Amino acid sequence: MKLTFWGAAKQVTGSMHMLTLDNGYKILVDCGLNYEQKRNMTEDTFSFPFNPTDIDVVILTHAHIDHSGNLPALVHQGFNGHILCTPATADLTKYLLFDSANIQWQEYKQKLNRAGKNRRKNVPKPAYIEKHVKETIDKMVTLHFNKRFELNEFATIELIEAGHLLGAASVVIEVKKGNDIKRIGFTGDLGRDHAEIIRTPTPMTDIDYLISETTYGGRKHKSSENSENELMKFIEDTCVRSRGRLIIPAFSVGRTQAIVHVLNKLHRTGQLPKVKVFVDSPLAVKTTHVYENYPYLLNKEASSFVKQFGSLFDFDELFWIEEMGAHDELMEYTDSCIIVSAAGMVEGGRIQEHVKNNIQNPFSTILIAGYCAEGTLGHRLLQGQKSIAIKGRDYPIYAKIASTDVFSSHPDKEEIFNYIKACDNKKLKKVFLVHGDEPNLIAMKQTLEESGLHAEVEIPDPQDVYTI
Ligand SMILES: [Zn+2]
Image (cartoon, rainbow, N blue to C red; front, side, top):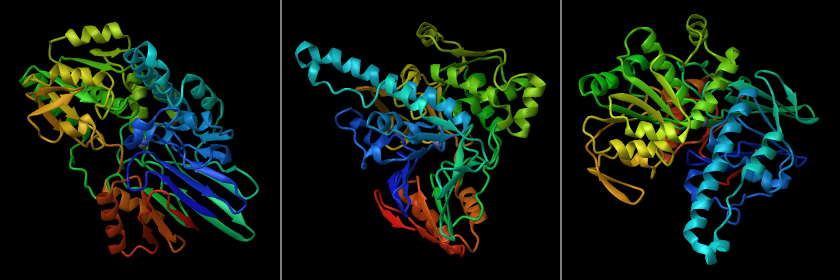
């Protein structure tokens, strides 16, 4: 059989791997948005490096858009099989894809307006619209963790808890050919050893080939503090001492819930000062209740928190903001407060407005709490410049720009290493490192090779094909 690395090879985003069985049956693992090629997201220019009608089945590891974001385009271009994922992933993905279609539609409408009457027909249509998202959702079939599912007479799959996001899975594909059985494990995105709300990743056992994420393959997370103490440092500094505003860009799904839950814990233990907390993200408002629908996926601490306080998230002083009117009011709010808003990399979304609003205020802090791809506004903010361009206008930076990795939902180098070691036995032949930039991939390859790992370690190039 053949393993092809169509995406997230030598980069983080755009996860898309294909396993082609000897009889030609094609399994696509993830179909994510490639942030590096986002500008090509129009109906005319967007294309897959294979024929979508040839794919037999898609396995979706988790809801994040860099793993799920191109599924409606795949369906639009003719994919007609099932999309297999956990129930929580199906629920979260639905919201994320509608949001993605909506963003593309709004951009399209803006371009139409700018183009004027005569040139409107030249404005390229979005890669997909709401209708394609609906068709995508109709193709989803949900599977629970640790239950084998037969794809056909040669292949079964099993989803394993990846601990990265509610419902996130690693997947083991077992392929039989006569007496020969091969097990291929895709980690998807992994979580950390001590995540907020959800359980830790479960390593895959007895596998022959491992395709592992390597986002932080060369980095040790700096924050050894627990997340409550770490967040309190910023709250005290900004909201108590300076009476300023703490602005936290966060992905609507995963990061926002982790941060709000920590704020809730600080509130319940009487540590949170009397400041209002705003979550200004319609997508976060919609997806947060999904967390409450899956109590069986929560870790022990989160379960007992719910038993004691009734909710992981809600507390006095917390305000969820969905409507535009309420967002506009918040833009006028001048008291000390905490604002959590999306998008996480500060590329678009309401967070850009909050960053613009606070960037020249020396009492405000912008706290970057997640991975920011190169070229994004979040990444540029962290470069320590004196001014920054936002939507074509230069703003001097007087606010404090800070970062923390305590909310990272990806394992660091030690945690990835331990995970891979736990999968390694005499059976494991090869480890393919993906979903990382080159320095992180090379660092993890070195670490693994120096550790005396039994298996060979490969860093595939984009579009590389391996016969396994
Ligand atoms: Zn992810």
